[in-house]
Length: 181
Image 1 (cartoon, rainbow, N blue to C red):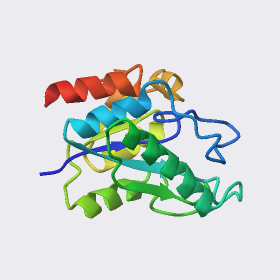
Image 2: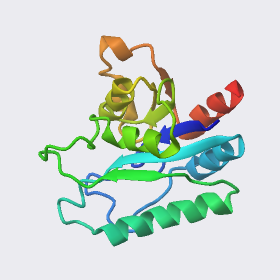
Image 3: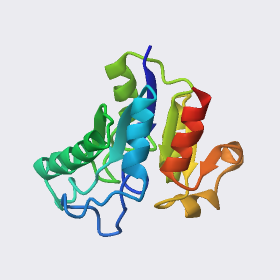
């Protein structure tokens, strides 16, 4: 059975930027994130990524560049002894009417279909409200990290999310999840 885990990208795995992460050189892992993904993978989790990438719709970078960023991520995790599973992204802008841009659950649904698993209680780790909302929409287990936009997100959690798990970093969240295995 697949033990699936879904991560947001910017602000969870790598540094986020108000100006968007537009090149592989700008894709800079957060401290400990690569090792955390490798540890999760080694512990038996299938680590997938679901990421809004409106920079595509805005013309800030193209799909080839995005794939190069993800290749860099995969190579770093591989070098640390882990494996990155499926990476799904939404190429649409915030005003596009799509079902994949979080908080819509389309990216998560695609990942679940790919692995042929139900998303009920699957850990979804993010740093923004839309990550948490997408997780709730599919019955997954929303987990907030304080990196990226997470500290700000934590201050405005709605009542239905005040009891979710919150960790300082992806590394701390990974340790907790691995401890459950």
